[in-house]
Amino acid sequence: MTAYAAPLRDITFVLDNVAGLAKVTALPAFAEATPDLVSSILEEAAKIAADTLAPLNQVGDSQGARLENGVVRVADGWTEAWNVLVEGGWNGLPFSPDHGGMGLPNVLNTAVHEMWQAANMAFTLCPMLTQGAVNAVESYGTEGQKALYLPKMVTGEWTGTMNLTEPGAGSDLAAIRTKAVPEGDHYRISGSKIFITYGDHEMVENIIHLVLARLPDAPAGVKGISLFIVPKFLVNEDGSLGARNDAVCASLEHKLGIHGSPTAVMAFGEGEGAIGSLVGEANRGLEYMFTMMNHARQAVGLQGLAIAERAYQQALNYARERVQGKPTGWTGAGATGIINHPDVRRMLMTMKCQIEAMRGLIYSAAAHVDVAHNHPDAAERGRAQMMADLYTPLVKGWSTEVGNVIASLGVQVHGGMGYVEETGAAQHFRDARITTIYEGTTAIQANDLVLRKTLRDGGQGLRGLLQDVATTAGAAESAGLAIGAKLNAATATATACVEWLVGAGKEDPRLPAGAAVPFLELMGILVGAQMMAKGALAAKGGGDAFLAAKLVTADFYADHVLSRVDGLGQTILAGSAAIMALDESQL
Figure 1 (cartoon, one colour):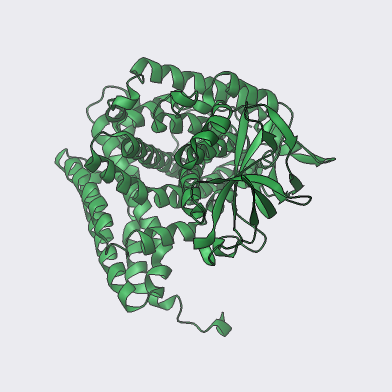
Figure 2 (cartoon, rainbow, N blue to C red; figure 1 turned 45 degrees about the vertical axis):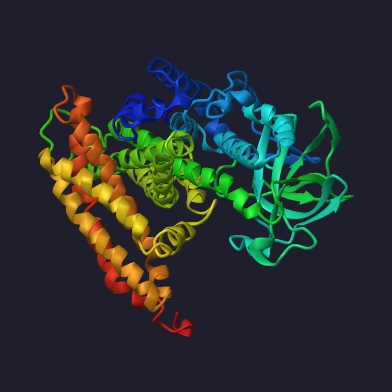
């Protein structure tokens, strides 16, 4: 497997020129985030990715996590790697100093996690979910809960989980059956949860489970779900650990990929009942859990980018080294790597330009979250939150789908050697596959974009986003960039689709639902093109090869990726009625 090297110049370029890091660090909340500190954070995170996490990626894949006599064992080196993060305070990077965090921007944390996810996705799921759990407790917990749990969760001395899914309740959370019975100042939790990432492990002394459950008098459906903190070990008032709680790992799933990440079946209350405490108000648990879920959705979208970057680096190095045949049109002396075969070059360029587009989209979404939570002006906070809400399904849905395509292309570049485990290309492909599924499938993200965030306001929010894209397109066209006019034309197609969705929803709700995934892909490609245009505007007139390459990749994206918008538009506008036209018996 090729060693991972963090693309620091690319990351810095996007932070500075596409995501608008300077506008974020200008906010009073981030006064400490100086350029020197940002640079130092990125460089040190890159070293951890390359030296600590990446060497363990294949180790985790081959050894996996295992359950032995009731104890979940992680792969060799996992615990030591976790201690590196704890000792450096890395888990606390985006959290308030009031709880022991660094108080730095979410967008910077996103850049750090891109490197770590690329280096070792299975490992980095643990800090990813712990940060999500911190967000939920920080947002909705009582002052007592915050004081008891946050200090050690922020440092990473304790980790956190998200417990939603049950055997009979996957995406349909209304079907949750886990119970919470009041008992004095706490609750007794009983039920089973499945697919719980890092539900149990030996890297830390305590695990804080956030669990969705129903109170005895809860209303039916999603309106009757409450959220509870259920620690692996009970925590005394002074912060010391008490008795073992009745929350155990019943088994571990055997998976296609991310073998190093323990995916647990959790049993709560097999004995006397697990002790838990209510978070916030009763029957508002799903609302609270969405704080974790939205964080996780952006983070999983980041995994799509990260695994794509890792697969691209692997494919690029292999293409340089592998000599096979004489490329069409090759005029150089002697043998050359397959990198000079036109179709291999096409695959590499397809990988490279979409990685750049995804990075721009994901970092921009993270920056909007920073503004939404920290800008002193309420109107600016509201606008940023609207953009973050619209970007989230694109980040999660489009980026993970593209990540799968790029990981597959990585195997293809390797040819037969990509299909065997020896090179490591197959691991990236296997690891990537889960990203379009967990934290809400691509269809769920598409339904969120279309049914909730387009139809509910009659397309008003989407029109605002498209106007923002059009502004960038106009600037690029005025600057003489080829992507500008093509982006303008694609924006017109997207606008027509929005108007069709709004009208079709009134005619037959199945029409926009059937068109949702193609529309998500269209919007991902479109906003990705906006990011490429922003990068090209910043690179125009630059004096080195790195900046000149940005102009070439923007042109390639416009010709080979943005051009798909027309076909997707036709699919949406003309093809949606055929989706449900065939009788079920004829399928």
